[in-house]
Picture 1 (cartoon, helix red, strand yellow):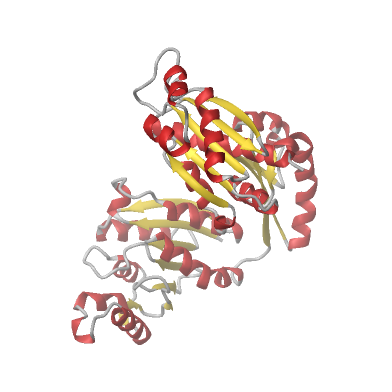
Picture 2 (cartoon, rainbow, N blue to C red; picture 1 turned 90 degrees about the horizontal axis):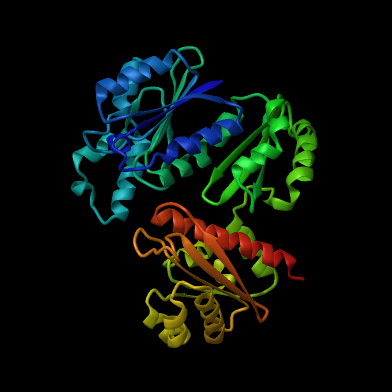
Length: 417
């Protein structure tokens, strides 16, 4: 089966909202062995939406459409679908009940429900309605009757769209596709994407089945190895030799084999030791603490976090000697170490991490340029300090600082017995 992803919303075209729906849905289609040939964004314009739908209906088997299902005049997805595939819009009794129950939960009586809310209860005839557990607008599946053509309409808000897909469409697509796609993702720390590609160039250039792809995001590199076979066992057998060869070449950098993020792995290592971690941050402004707290269950390991942006805060909160600050400066190895020691004296956490640097765009000098960062790790009574030189804008420097710290912490924890 071939598919297209069509995302509706002028706010997407204007760059006001990042289109995460397309990436998510492409990943889901890959899981079922469905080829995504197109990703298209259309604004809230009926004629343009209708035109794109008409073109896609002649090119692919499945159109996955998000957005435009709400109650306002710019929500026109259902009207466009009905027009292109020659269907009438009919009201659905179950959708009416769902919408009215939602409004009641919001404290509104039936008489207070505005007429435009009832627009969400009309669907192209023959549609299978998909209940929205996270919002008010239901989705639907329309098997058009034109060969195997299917249009699936999902809400635009990502949390609603993902919940609806997971609830209704995993089983739907499992029954529509043959074979099994299996993939393995290896995540690496301490090596760049270009170096990974160089190490695997012969495998990548000669690949047939399985396929190998490298991709990166700030501070992280991943290798995806994938194959499509008749069943899970066959797929695992095809994947194994290639994965073993990659491990042979790059095993020292691999920290995860199950798509888990680096912060999850670090939290698990700290939890396994029944330790606590605390942070004190200057240039990252809480981003390091957030990286721990983003992990579900982080309360098991995360103790305290301080943001000591000024010299006064460093002196007051974690007892950094003012004479040391004046002598070496806030951005220095000596200050980073004093921050980590002061944090330990304040919290007695097993892992104490400090970070100080110049995130820019101003504040740099020839001696201490923008992007200079120091991070200290106090673990089991010993302090180790790292120096980073990171290029980029303010946000990139902050993000890469946190990723570098997490990489180093992972490496330290792996060495601890």
